[in-house]
Amino acid sequence: MNESGKVAKMNTKVANVIEKDAILPERISTGVSGLEEILGGGFIPQGAYLVRGAPGSGKTMLGLHFLTAGTQKGEQCLFITLGETEQQIRKNAASLGFDLQGVSFLDLSPSPEFFTEDQSYDIFHPAEVEREPITRKIIEQVVAIRPRRVFLDALTQFRYLSTDQLEFHKQAFSFLRYLRESGATVVFSSDSSPEAPDDDLQFMSDGIIQLECSDMERRLFVTKMRGSSFRMGHHTFRLTARGMEVSPILVPDSLHEGKAPVVSGEMIASDIPELDALLHGGLDQGSTTVLTGPSGVGKTTVGVQFMRASASRQERAALYIFEEGLESLLRRCEAINLPIRPLIDNGWLKIVPIEPLSFTADEFSSLICRDVEESNVRLVMIDSVAGYNMSLRGKDLVSHLHALTRYLKSKGVSTILVNELEALSGDFHISEIGISYLADDIIFLRYLELNGELRKAMGVIKKRVGDFEKTLRELEITPDGLKLGAPMTRLRGLLSSRAQLI
Amino acid sequence: MVSEDGPLILAVNHNRRNLDLLKQFLSEDGYRIVAASSLKELGEALNAEQHIELALVDVSGFDPGIWRHCEHMRIRQLPYLVLVSSKEAAGSLHQGCCHGARYVLVKPMRKKELRLILNGCCRHHDEPDSTITGP
Image 1 (cartoon, chains in turn blue, purple):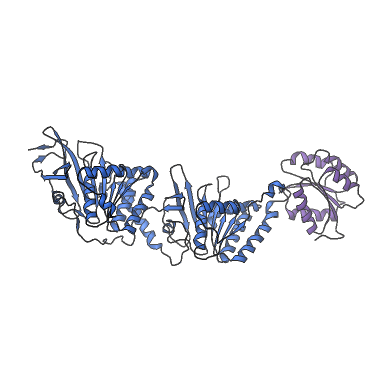
Image 2 (image 1 turned 60 degrees about the horizontal axis):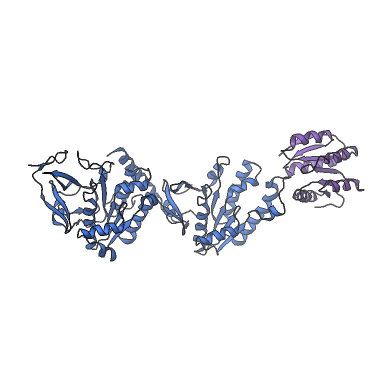
C-alpha cells in the first residue's frame, strides 16, 4: 500500500471512532440538508452556536434554515437582526422559498431616519446611548414570545455598543447565557476580519461552523462542538434555489465497519460465458473491481456489459459517466448489440452524466449515497477515475476513492472503477495513479500487435476471493456484441512490451 | 429628573442629536438646561437675565466666532467646559486653554466622568483648574 493509501485508511479509522460517539439522545435540527450528519444529529438544545464567514458565505441562509425548521415543528422562533432590515430579509427569504410567517423579528438595524434626520451623534459613546434601549427591546421580545430558537445576525455588531473588549466579552457572554437560560437554542453569526477578530466569540460558543467561499467551491467545516463529536474535514456546500445543501465528506458506514456486509455470495455474471469463465463465474458481490487499460480498448463496453447483466436480473445498477454524453453512450451500445435503453426506461439501470467541473467530490459521493440508500443500487460503475479526479480539483484522489469504495463495500454494493492508462503499449502497468490497492479484482485490457494486426486482449490479474483464469482471452467488439475468444495459451511476453504467439 | 431649583447649565451644541442627548442626561441628573445650537442662540442665552451655573460648549461645527463667546464667558467669570472631537483636539485644546475653559473634554465622553466633573464644577466653581480628559 502506498503512503496516501495508508493515510486514507487511518483517516477512515479516526472518522469511524468519531462517528461511533456521535449519537446523542436529543438534538435540534439545523434544517440544513447534510449538516445534521456532520454535527452528529444536530445542535444540542440550549447551546449557542457561532457561524463564521465572509460576506455572502451563507451565514444568514443557515440561520433561515434553522428558524424555519423550528416553525415547521410549531416552535417559537426569533430573528434578531442588527444589519439587514426585516423587510429585506423577508424579501430575500421569500425568493428562496423560505416561509418566515411563523418567525418573529426584532429589527435593530438603523432606521432611515438615522440618515434623513441626521441622528448621528458623538457626544457619548454608542454603548452609553444605545445599549440600554436595545437590551430592553431584546428582553421585552424574549419575555413576550419565549423563543425556542434564536438567530442573531450578527453578534459582532454589539462590539460597537461596548466601550472596550472586556466589556464586550462580558456582555456577549451574559447575553448568550440569558437566551439559553430562557430556553432558547441560539445560532449567532459573526463578521470577523483580520482587523476585528472574533476569537472571544469562538471561546464563548458551544460550537463553531466556519463557512468559506472560493472561486471553485463553497466549503464548511466544524471546529468545535461542545459535548459532542462531529465529522471533521472540509465539506462542500451549495447555495441553491432551495437554500443551503451540504455534501458531507464521505465516511464509510460505522455500523458496518469491521463486519462482513450482507451479500448473497453470488457472483455478478456478465452473461457472456467466456468472460464469466475468465473470472470463474463473475465479479464478487460487494467487491471493488478496477477495469484498466488504454484509451479505446473497450473498458466502458466491458463494464456496461456487467451493468446490463445485473440490471437484467433486476439488481439495480448505476453508471456515472464523466467523459461521455448519455446519448453518445446509448448509440454506441446499440451499435454493438448492447441494448440498455429498456433497462433505463424500467428503472433497473441508471446512467448519470457528471460534469466534473460543476460537481465537487463530496457532492458526487452524496449522490451515490442517495442512490444506494434510497434506490437500492447494488452495482456502481464510475467511468472514469480520471473524470472523478477532475472533480476533486487537486485534492487527494486515493483517499477520496478509498472512502467511497469502503462505503460501498460496507453496504454490500459492488463497484467497477474504469481506469485509463496513458500508454497504448509498453511495459505492463495496472494503474498510473496508485489506485490498485483499492481493488479486490483487477481486470486488464491491452492492445496486442500479433502478426502485423492490432488486436485486443483481456485478462484478470487479481481476484481477492476465489480463483480466476491465468491466461488471456482475445476481445472483440463486434456489431453482434462483445466476443471473447478461447484462452490464449500460446501467448508469451504479455507483461513486457513484446507479446508473441508461439 | 429635572429639578425646579437645580443648577442651570447652558448647553451649546451645533448637533441637534448631541443636544438632545445632553439635555436628557442633564435633566436626569437634576439640572435645568438652557440650550443653544447656533452662535445667535448662544448670544441670546448669555444676554438673558438668568444665573447660569456652568456652560458646556461643544465647539464642533461652529466657526471661530465661538471663541469670542468663550472669551466673553471668561470675562463674565462664567465657568465653562469645552467639548472637542478627537480630530479637533490639538487645535481646540490650545484655544480652550487660552480662553479660560475650566476643562477641555474630548468626545465621546463617558457619562460617569461627565457627571463627576459637573458635580465638582457646580459645587466648587471658584477653584480654577484645567484638566484634559478623554474617552
